[in-house]
Length: 220
Image 1 (spheres, rainbow, N blue to C red):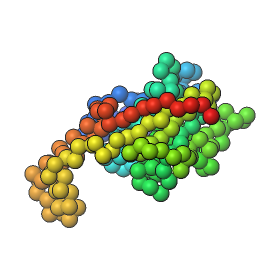
Image 2: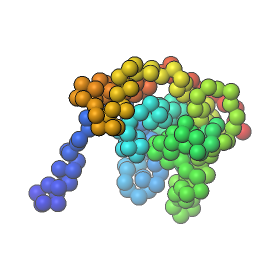
Image 3: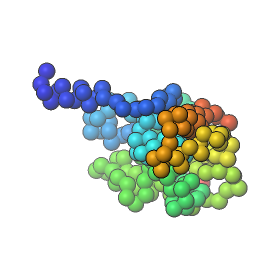
Image 4: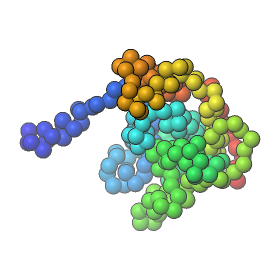
């Protein structure tokens, strides 16, 4: 085996994760990846929650909520088949500069490939075009919590997903150890207690379906 091959194997096997999350990956097809022979035809990408964490740079209830919003929306839109990038539109009820919407929308786009004017314009003939498929301040809602709509552009079928973030467990007093951690004065016990409480909150979001509601919406 060449030194380059050894290096590739090392990078593949190397991991420094200090936490594990037990949640299934989201499977989604990508016509561009299939056309360019990145994926076998008809086979999906597997997007893990860890991919979302890598993009966000941290794991938190917002990142976990974004993953679950995408998961719930796609499951409802495609009950009997794999979702397909460039055939999914995502609409956010709030503005891009609102952390509950801007960051969440960005992380949802990691799964769905949806984008605004800065998105991929597609191959020749427009295959895989994702521009204009992610919009903010796109509708009004009375729901409490970040609310997103997912719509299939091929069938116009749509669903609305609300993340009831106010119902996420608060983590208890150990969450207050974050200040000492940031100041560099925390003890090992404080760090460990914080980590346990923090990631228990994340795991609650990843596991609790009651934190999310999904309702169908009428075609345009």
